[in-house]
Image (cartoon, rainbow over all chains, first blue to last red):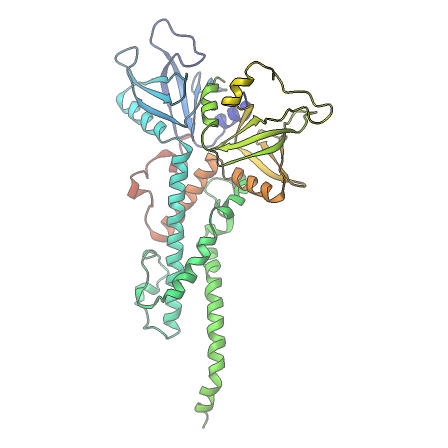
Length: 259
Length: 174
């Protein structure tokens, strides 16, 4: 079975962040000759995403081995040498031997077990989806918040409390209960729902080439003012409609006002 | 670099996000398009032989190493011909309804894929662009900081995972 090994090795050596690093002892493992002493072989291990690489040393120029941490469990294990702090990576597949590894101490052992057991792609995706929906919620309540403050200034509701007026978004999660009719709730919700996975996946390749910390959603949403303007479009439109309505009814007012 | 093929084969049998029979051409000079069952599982793209013989087009050699040996076995649990790790790669739409995957260390080496419609092609491109751990990480870091800006709270704190290296703006350096 082929694998794009050069790219994999390149990824191992790239400057993308490592999720855990350290020296571990390793026994056997596929392709490793058994060490007669039973003390295993000390290697430098680097965890990157769902891939565990080992190197000859910290300065190793090419990975010695690769383990893909999917569909496996990580548990404490007994090492051939009693004082070692061992653990094993087990795969639920026929004929696949577990990888036996050992750390220098209990703290390192715990840290490794923790890091390895959370290394799967699925775990990362779960957290990403959770945060994605949290961000949508926060944006929706921001939209609602802007709706209600605008409505308030339009004089159809009682004026908001001064703290609600402030651009500070500490209360971004709380809805302004006093003036948020259902219609607005729905309108506020419609747009963020449309900006789901599809859109930011399209941005994938661009963001792959962008520096870290930049928006994968779209580069321009990373600052609040653009985000604010973007969501503001809806409000501007509503306001425009409201003004048109107000203008329609205005001639009557003017007539009344004239002497 | 050592790796256990059986582990990768087990991964290739896990539920796929996308799977379809596509035309595939490797990066080597003179490579020809072959029908492959292409399967996206997490950040790996697996490709399998399809049932039909590969010698469809004139001049195309038969399946490599394909013989009576193993054919009964592979029918029961087909083994992938190969896998591509989708990290540090670039997925590009190609005319008329295909896409290519190349890797950062050698962008000229491209794996070509042919879909049966533009729609199918777009679906694959979208799925592949989101199928990288590093892409997920960047998305997470972005969402985390956006939520923090908007609400003043760290959204990971409630789960007790705010200290995890994989969720930090700048992780450990290898």
